[in-house]
Image 1: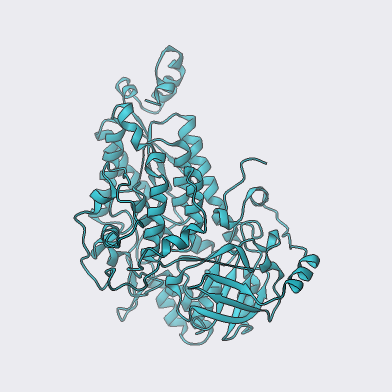
Image 2 (image 1 turned 120 degrees about the horizontal axis):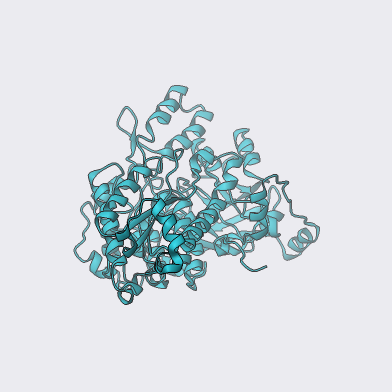
Amino acid sequence: MRSNEVKKGFSRAPHRSLLRATGLKDEDFDKPFIGVSNSFIEIIPGHFYLDKVSAIIKDEIRANGCVPFEFNTIGVDDGIAMGHDGMLFSLPSREIIANSIETVMNAHKLDAMIAIPNCDKIVPGMIMGALRVNVPTVFVSGGPMAAGHMEDGTPIDLATVFEGVGQHEAGEISDEELTEMECNACPSGGSCSGMFTANSMNTLMEAMGIALPGNGTILSFTPEREKLYRDAAKRVCEIALMKSADQEKFKLRNILNESAVRNAFAVDMAMGGSSNTVLHMLAIANEAGVDFNLEDINAISQKVSHIAKISPSLTTVHMEDINKAGGVNAVLKEMSKRDNDALDLNSLSIMGMTLGEKIKDSEILDKEIIHTIDNPYSKVGGLAILYGNLAEQGAVIKTAGITGERVFTGKAVCYDGQAEAIKGIMNKEVTHGDVVVIRYEGPRGGPGMQEMLAPTSLIMGMGMGDTVALITDGRFSGATRGASIGHVSPEAAEGGMIGLLKDGDSIHIDVDKYILSVDLTDEEIAKRKAAFVPIKKELTSRWLQQYRALVTNASSGAVLKTDL
């Protein structure tokens, strides 16, 4: 056992003395030490109850012959941090979470880990940290919340409230109607009920084989979810009690390998996941030592049918509906029917079976919710990477969320930051046929790459979602819908073309041809570049100053440099 390094031999008497102070007995020193990495935090709806989840998991670990040691990570609620400078800290929190797991697990030489994430940056941050440690690891999330409902029974969620602000601003709904949305959209604890970033990542963990079936879809606060917690705890103990040679294949990097990364992207395409998954999966691939590049995503998209639409892409469908319809396994089984190599069915899961074995008995239980490959929403996946003179290193669009035309040409309306854009949109500076440009919100320029849910929701709520596009070097919430193109790279802060745009420039978008370009001559572009000086924001935060100095752009997952 790895933990023998801190608990065996006469030289480790001081170490054992300290461990005894935590309650350990003689017999415990012969048992595996299991790290219980918990993201409990009281201000996040998907996390405030995770202390009770970890109590269940620790009891199960003890009952199965191992010793649990719980430790916590930080967390940021993107919804609460949205629309103000608190969002600057959201993406950087991913790196703190990864660093904290690496620190605790390696400092104390724990043998295996069970990770309890749920929302936003916390899921990828935990995965990234666990990959660095590379011990057997099982992930089990807190679970999604149920959808909310208006008094007339209409299903709603957090995205409804954000768009409701735009509707209220446009005079389409009353104060009372907005308040009704506010009070009913989030009826319980859990990750937000749609296919936003949290639930996108929680479903992708199933595809990667690092979480048990149902992780992304079984509702929080249900007996089925508690069973999942217990099953996950039992499984990590089963592996930890194996002989070292048998454990080897369950080390995280042997599970989360190139096949797992590609399987994750394929499922992402089939279910129309958040555009943030691109950012996070690139970072995860980097930590896993997997050679995966942004341009590989479009090739995967061509092999995958988009067969499940979930809020925000389809506002009437939520994670609970996907669960009732057969869950992620049903999606995977249906995907496997396409005669190509989009899925590696031989990929090993933490359960000890291959992906093919895991899904062999699965089936779609409601074909209105999960479509068949013969009746897809689209024959290509729900995400696309666009290129052109405006995005030489790529930009991301959630095609599943497009509500208007897939080919669009419009006039640029430029804003140097989200706050300026929100003010401009609310002041009616944007109209039908425009392309809103929000720059200096990239990983370096923000810094921290803010989500643009507030401006996209305003556009949608004000009735312009079908006729106005938005491009940014920032990113979007998973709750965003409409023609929203993010992660434009190079970003403005590093001299990217998005920083050179002027009001009135003609911007062309062609989703199916993967094009994002501006209609300018090479001479005009060269002239603008020669005169361009990027804006560098004043910062008082020491952490954000460090982050800006180390972060790479979105095309590489906004990972931090490790060698200067």
